[in-house]
Structure formats: C-alpha cells, structure tokens
Length: 120
Image (cartoon, rainbow, N blue to C red):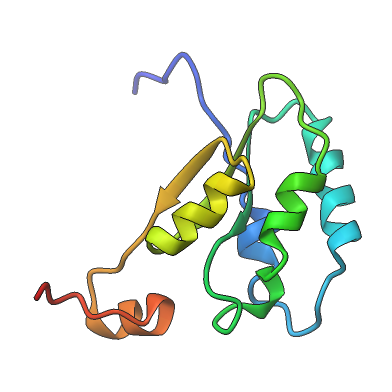
C-alpha cells in the first residue's frame, strides 16, 4: 500500500461534538476551546454550523464564536451551512470555508435541514 505524502486532519469537535449536547456550552468556553485547538498545530477547525437555532440551539451563537476566536495563520476556520441563509450568516461572520450538506435519504434530510430530497 502506498501512503499519501500528506494527511489533513479536520477537527470537527466544536461543531459535531457540541451539537448533540443536552446542556448549553457558553460562547466564552467555545471560544477558549477553539483558541486552544488553534495552538495545537492543526490546520482545519470546523467551528460551528449555521443551521437555524430552532434546529440546533447549541450552535445558535455561531456568529459570535467565529467573531470571538483568535485566528492563527495557517488554520482554516470552517462551518457547516444547510442553505443560502446559513451561507449569508457564515460569510457575515467571516468564515474561511463552508461545507454545504444534504443527505441522500429523505428522512435524514428532513430531520437535518427540514427539506425534501425531491427537487421541485
């Protein structure tokens, strides 16, 4: 097996790890965590998701978190966006990169972004 010359580790904990928490983590604690991650030498951090707060209240402060972090040169600060409204919010918060997502299954797509997979 031939190994790649380079591997990129994408840290998604601040988004994926927090979106399922039952208790709210403070904006200040999120910022501190991301700032600590930025100092580890990792080059990519998925900071949050710009999903409607009704669907993922744990990430309702995505804009404040992105605006509050200390950015390190060489680190990409990314976010998930489900739609154009989320993209607009992410761009206003000065995100470096976005991941647009949708699911192949109807049920998963409806429960994640409240949209059908059927195009009308």
